[in-house]
Length: 110
Length: 114
Image (tube, each protein chain N blue to C red):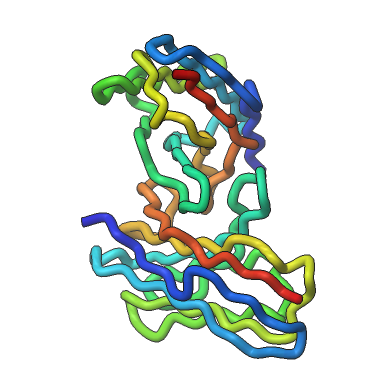
């Protein structure tokens, strides 16, 4: 089955700086890669996703890049704000379910 | 509207109790999911319903019993749980039951088994 690795597990940045979270996957058949943000006491919220026919996607301060050859994808958050503090999960689509990364706890220091 | 609602928000139950978790979506999605999430871990898939039929059961113990009464509702019946079953139970839905579509999660039910 699919195996998704996510790094780093924790990340602290100063407000206004950029944050980058990286994931790798093992199954070359995976073709959909969502990113979720989970705040304390809440369910995961889909923030951006990318499909394998696209190399990059951007939505305001958030962007995702995908390298199919290397089997890795990354989340980029620019101009970070304190409200970006949360746990972020990447995922890769397997044959019939999502396989989640282990999560990155992002702290934005005001 | 991408809202999935779950009730109750919190539940405390003893090991001999029977309780149910409820999930509802009105997005016209035809696939619904139950996940279990332990602290500081990613969600773990438990069950998938596709077009109101159980399509995936990830070897979940029989003390968890899912039910999909219609395309908008999903229940999880709990009976004789163990303390290690304490977790956040998340419901999600997607347009169809393949892994290539966005899944939208509810806020979860925080379950404590005493």
